[in-house]
Length: 316
Image 1 (cartoon, rainbow, N blue to C red):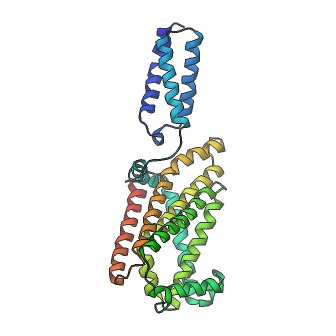
Image 2 (spheres, rainbow, N blue to C red):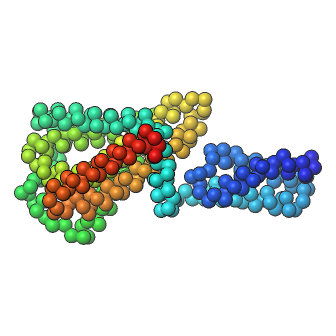
Image 3 (spheres, helix red, strand yellow):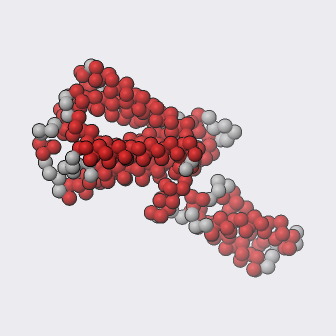
């Protein structure tokens, strides 16, 4: 084949590949980018074998280098990329995975309500969820006349707790996402455990009469934290279902496709958990009138639920 014919047949594909490389964002690469990269490598080998012009070989060699850079560079994201995914791709992923999101939502809050009613009607049932020492620690934490509520936290303690909340919350979320690869079981168990725990603890705190310090503390950051857990559970279940029902694909490829779809959910849950940790460390423990905390918390819940509805309904 002459060089002119070789270029005419493949030039549009080379231009598309170069355009994809010039975007500079690995998250926007198509799923067949590795296959396109291998074809460019094959084109370069043909050009060398047939002794085409040095200019053509240099062009193909540049494309190979650009493709290699995109394929093998680190997966770290800049702050700007994270924000772009959160604002642009996260709502679209909520819509694409809406059945998993609402399924996870109903499972979490449905079981939380069941646990709440159970412990509210039978106070001793709290010991099915927590051991006696944990129950005592919980009561000490929210006792209005106890030492914990009367202690004033300094700025250094706030920063320390911010790091602790990030470590704890993100650990739970990523456990659910990673556990989803175990046919979804690894995502469902933490989701169900946290829903039962949340409902049972809330009911016990109301039973002992400490609801004011408890709900004024959790209401604001709870909107971001609990919904992030729901979204992480949905992402994990989506991964697990891709293995159970891979459709026409091999299971490894189906898992790869599902991973690409849930990546914005993972980023979204991560951003929400960071916001929750910030609020929990620097706002929730402040000595602010409860009425004001309830007002701000209510606005937070309204905003989160509204964005969840818009995302799952319209992808916006």
